[in-house]
Length: 325
Image 1 (cartoon, rainbow, N blue to C red):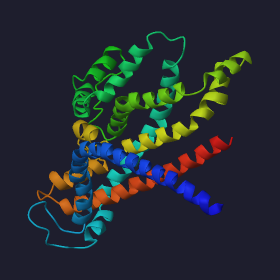
Image 2: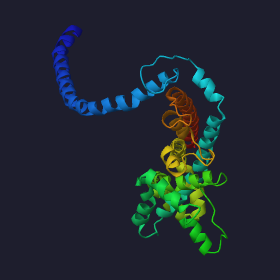
Image 3: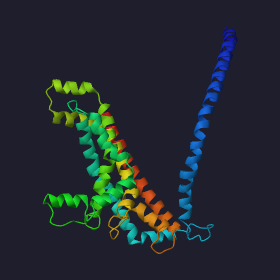
Image 4: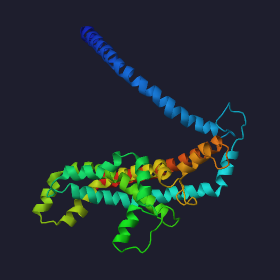
C-alpha cells in the first residue's frame, strides 16, 4: 500500500517540481533586466567610492605627492607624524566639538519645530515646512560665501543691524576672531541642516498611532503630559537614529568650513576634512603630501566608525528597552 501511494504521488511531485523550475527561470529572466540597469551604478560606485577608499589606505603607507608611481614605502611613518602633529589634534578636537554642538542643539530644536509644524491648529503647515527646508537644498558653498558677508566685520549685515538697534557700539569680526568663529560656523551649520532633521522628526510624529492621543485627550491629559508620556517614549527609537545621522553628518562639514573660514583664523575653525584637503591639495609647505593626508583620512575614518558603532549600540539598547516596555 505504501509503495502504491509513493508511486501515485511521484508524478504529481515531478509535475510540481517542473512548474517551480519554470517559475524560477521566468523570475530569473525578469530580474536580469534589473541587474542590467543596476550595473552602471555599480560601476560608478566601484570607481568613485570603493576604489578611492582602498587607495587611501594604500597611499597612507607611502611617501607620495600624488604624481607618478608609488615607490617610497614608509610603513606607519605617516601615522607617527600624524599623531605628533598638534594641528591634527586641533582639527580633530574642533570636529568633535562641532559634532556635539550640532547634536545637542540641533536635534532637540528640530524636534520642537516638528511638533509645532505637526500641530492640528497650525495653518499653512506646508508653507512653513518649505521655508525651513529651503536651506537644506541650497548649495553649501554658496551659503558659506553669503554668510561671510553677513557676519563680516565691516559693512556686514549683522553688524549693521545690531549697531542700528544700538546693541553694539562697534562692529565685531565674527568670523575673523578666534573667540567667535567656531560658534558662528556652528550656528550656520545648525541653520543649514535643521530642515532635514525636522523632516525626520515629522515622519516619526506622523507614524504614531492617533488612538493614543485621542485616549489621552479623553482622560484629560495636558499637552505637556501627552508629550512626556506618549510622544517622547514612542519617538525614542527613531530619535536614536536621527542622533546617529546628525552626528555622522556633522563630522563632515568640509564645504561649509572651507567656504566660510578655510579653517581660520589661526586654525580656530580647522576641521579634519579641511586639514586633509590642505595637506593633499593646498600644502602650506608648497609640496603635496597625499600619503600623509591619506593617513589622516584613514585615522579619522576609523574614529568616525567607532562613534557610529557606539551610537549604534545605544540605538539597539534604546530600541530594546522601548520594545520591552
